[in-house]
Image (cartoon, one colour):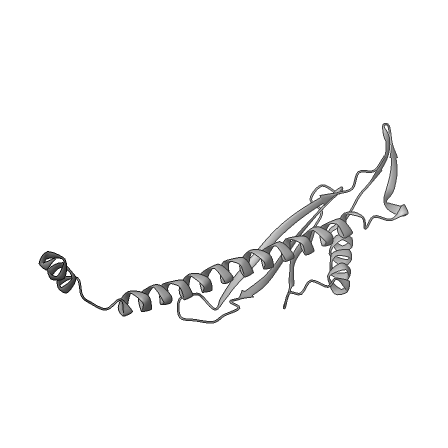
Length: 147
């Protein structure tokens, strides 16, 4: 019985520092997970917006741009038409993002539209561990299939 009491005296101490350390570590981990999730969701929102703008740009052809070729009909998109359609789509779309910038909207081959958008992500819970702002830029390409 003396041995048991002797061991108990040697192991006596406070668990308070351990509890404080683990609590702080848990809070920091929660902040990082919330920030990473927010960044991921904002990037997905921006990519969805770019997909819609590229689709609107690829569908911006008019009857006057259709020509008859040997294997059917063909149309040609120009950069100005794609940019106008993408800008109109962005003006009408609800994204939940602030300060979305249309970086570029073009048609490289005359049949597809490529749109690049940029915004700035802001951390939802500001602290010293995470950056306050991160720029996000996405590019999406859409092609109209015309039969």
